[in-house]
Amino acid sequence: MNSPDKRPLLGVNIDHAATLRQARYREMENSCGGFVEPDPVHIALRAEQAGADGITVHLREDRRHIQDRDVERLRECIATRMNLEMACTAEMLKIALALKPNSVCLVPENRQEVTTEGGLDLESKRNEIREIVAALGEAGIEVSLFIDPHPKQIDLATELRAPVVELHTGAYAHQFGKPRQREEWERLVSAAQRANRAEIIVNAGHGINYVNIAEVSRLPHLNELNIGHSILSRALYFGIEEAVREMKERMRAGASRL
Ligand code: PXP
Image 1: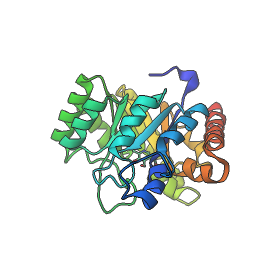
Image 2 (image 1 turned 120 degrees about the vertical axis):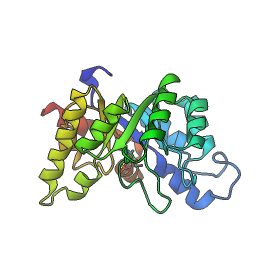
Image 3 (image 1 turned 45 degrees about the horizontal axis):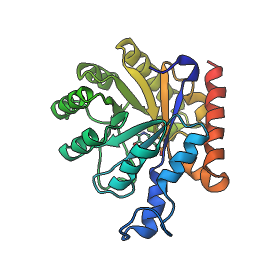
């Protein structure tokens, strides 16, 4: 666990820099250099300079954005923590064990989705997840499970001996400013409290933006937030450094009102 004064930490998800590159250069042999742009690694380094505490990437099975070469280059270049999001498959486990990111976040993957839509169903995937958590743990890689904020999922994460959970904030973000915002917020709060009682580290992510960050930063026991879309979108207007600095400031302001 990181020192409490710095929390919540910010993991910047740079997948969408690769989405933009792939939109034009999918067929190119090289993933960087020459006129191939933007380079997600370049974006990651600038995000770090501006105060990101870690860099998150999702190497999807269909390689629709981040490529294998990107994760290799990131592993070599970044100075903060590397968090690899991946599906629970043998192929991804092999890649993670060779790459040795600081942490792995296990996520569900569905080829039809635009971005990760729901949390993992720990019930139906119990056995494979148990094995992957154990294998990564033995290799010294911290494992996090991306789950919906429901008591059952927290209890299953406890049973599977996951050291970390990332609570899916998508439903809350979707209801933000609508009548069910409170209900979704309460769900997140009680999930965070339940995880903390089980001595599980609490991260959160999905759908977090410059508006809802004030409340999200006040989630109890919060260790880290993983944010992609809103930071990369703001970077188009003001540059990645400004986008990261602004988010960090809003996180600090939100958390200081605890
Ligand atoms: N956390 C996880 C596990 C995700 O899959 C994603 C989306 O890739 C994020 C965080 C970031 O979500 P967003 O792009 O909505 O900030």
